[in-house]
Amino acid sequence: MASSWGWAGNMSSIASRIYFFLIILQIPLFRVPCRSGMCTTPLEVTSSQLVANDIFPVVVMKALLYPGAVANGMINNMTIPRWDNILNIYNLTNVKEASPLTELQRLEVLAGSYFSVAGALVCLLKPGRMSMFGTLLVIWGLVKEGILGKPINTDPTKAVYVYPTMVIALVCAFASVKYDAKKITRSAPAVRPIAKPLQSSAKSKLK
Image 1: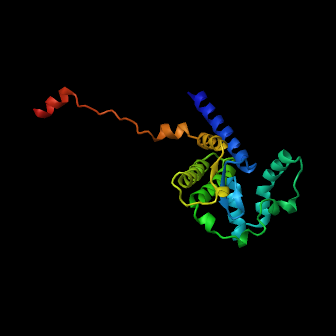
Image 2: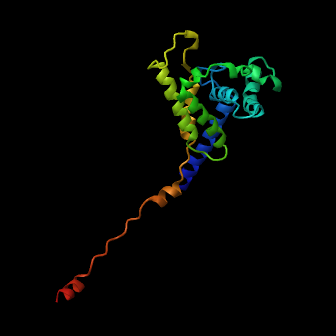
Image 3: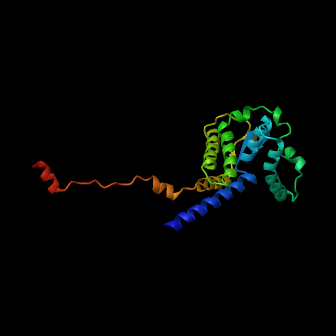
């Protein structure tokens, strides 16, 4: 029994690490309009919102985007992008002047992207449910727009698209949730035996 729970804990750690690399290396999971144009990862959606509102310093956003920029540069043209050119690569230089309507119409995708990025970072220290909740929010936002047609999109170049890698992210998000067997067994109420009086004592009381 202990070995099975230990194996489940190892699987949770592996799944959380895979989910972290999916997010931080910016593996395309979906395609959705955002302030910077078309975003394909939760980190791009989050970065466009944070840079536009000056919530975090630009150095922090560059540090989050740089690993993915290096990975994409090595895959596409075997070059490492410059640190000073990160905002230009992701079209974030003029993102403050863009209309926030595109993101306000997709609040589920925006909120889910926030939770996905935060969950990927937190899961390195302690696996939790934040990444699972964020991934489900993103999927619901994409399903609502793709199937229900809300908001209405008449431009085919800005159509919502879900990549097959979203399935991997969803599986890793669920598998990264770690359940503590000791807490489960402790929280279970103990069944107390009901004491029955002896027949002799009951008869003596009646006398």
